[in-house]
Each structure stands twice: as C-alpha cells, then as structure tokens.
Amino acid sequence: MTTSVDQAMTLFQQGFSCSQAVCAAYAPSLGLSRELALKIAAGFGGGMGRQGEVCGAVTGAIMAIGLKTGSIEATDTAAKENAYALTQQVIDQFKDRHGTILCRELLGCDIGQPEGLRQAREAQLFTQRCPQFVQDAAEIVATLIKEKE
Image: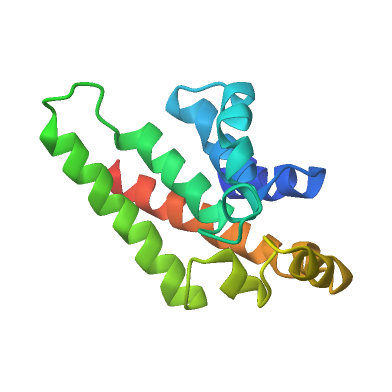
C-alpha cells in the first residue's frame, strides 16, 4: 500500500513543487480532490512563488493540517486553536530537523534573486536537498494526523 509520504515523494519526483507534492498527497483522504489541491498549492513552491520564504513543503504540510482540522464555522474557536496548535507542531518539528523553515536558509542561497536561483540550479539543490524537505514535511503530517485519530 502506498502511503501519503510515498505519494508526496512521487509527486515531487514527477515535477510538482514541494508545496503541491505534500498538500496533494494528503488531500484526497481529507476531502479535497488531488487536482484542486495541486492548483491551490501551486503558488507556494520555492518559498512562496520562488521568493525563498517559508519552505513550500512546510506550507503544503500546513494546508494538509488545515484540511484535517480547520474550522468551517467562524465561531468554532476550538477548531481554530487546534489547527494553530498543529501548525505550530509542524513548524517546530521541521525546525528541529532542519534548523529553519525558510527556503533560502535551507538551500543556502536566495532563489528569489537571479544569482541565487542560478546557484541553486547549478548545485542541483532542488534535486539534492528538496526531496528530504518534502519527505520530512510529509512524515510530520502523517504523524500528527495519526495522533489525531
């Protein structure tokens, strides 16, 4: 049986961004079609539109957490607090593994700048480092979802 972590890795290897891979791997089991998840997460790769901000794998994980625990009623403060608490856990656990959630710090260059993007491509950082970030974010989501069930 293919796990959501495996699915995230496959999607990333197929060429989807880190945010798309993590979000779309979990979406179908959480009530959102894979296609719509891919569209929603499309702009978050590369640290939000290739700006080097929060790692797309982390934002994809947070989107998955929202699908699992997010509120649909404005007055549901318990669901909101739960989603925030789990989001903080995603961030804390990713930071524990990598020291940061910022794409530019994870890659060691600012891909939001032409020189940084060139450097990342030449060093093959997207294929050498990013798969680990996708895997770790997907594993963190899997653990948190399992704990909630």
